Image (cartoon, rainbow, N blue to C red; front, side):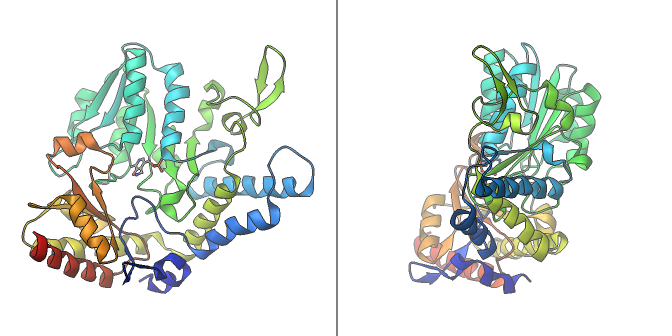
Length: 406
Ligand code: PMP
């Protein structure tokens, strides 16, 4: 469907172990199209300068490109440019919220509600905050297929709930979470809502007004952008009540020996030299997606890849599939499985010898793996440039691996 776009991604012409690359590790990071590589290269070769700090032509250009990138990101999620803070990734965005809003507004006895399927990035910062503040960390439990037990919200959300933080889409099982149900409970008790959109931003059109969340976090590198750039959306109503995350140059308006004044958002939240080239690269990635990819078509393409791999894996002996398979067939972008008697790392290593990149392990969600009794899983995760032919080759290779080593 998007096959003609493969030529835009130079790395897809590489080989591993003498075999054509089949890249099924997109939930970890995606490949980059030429236009993103060009944007970064052009910045360094033609405009490179630090921003906000000078009056020469290059600094003006760099500042303009950086602020344009912010506007592009903002427009892509229905936000205002001043609501967008650049970070180095989802992990930093969530840590930002924990160490600013969390430190200010979570007190002893308060409750933070997350889910059992969170990536460690949306678990450990809250665990630490709860320990420091003598607050309570509560979990929305998962069913055996990884879907959330949303009917438990009625008990779990209490007047003490100050924050609900959850992933829009799970990196381990591909479960897509119903934010509407959670949002209604958050509003009922006046809790803040944080959405970890690391796995949804690449695959759907986000709208922060429709989600009506207070914070939303995602990473550029999972949606064709460079590494080292993340986004934190902070609802404008919170700006005045939020302390800066870090202190130093760039975020100050006036500095005296014993007192300083901050600039307004978003600059108050970006101390030091920001990831300028990376922000420009992310804007190029968003522009590439907007220009070439219809989101509905992308979702059906990824769902078709999921359906094909699920059907194929079901035919193979010894394979155990995880996750809500019916949901994945209609709106998935990744599939996780294990093979009886073979460690996931061995399977991934054998696949690598066939030119195939997949992820193996607990996928940074140890509590989920433990709860579901998954020792380690193999995860195949897709993006626009993957094809049904690649899935068929993957299935052939896997069958061969099971026959030979299983
Ligand atoms: N949350 C989810 C759901 C993720 O999948 C990831 C990345 N695997 C993260 C957070 C962390 O993202 P990053 O490593 O880019 O900070």
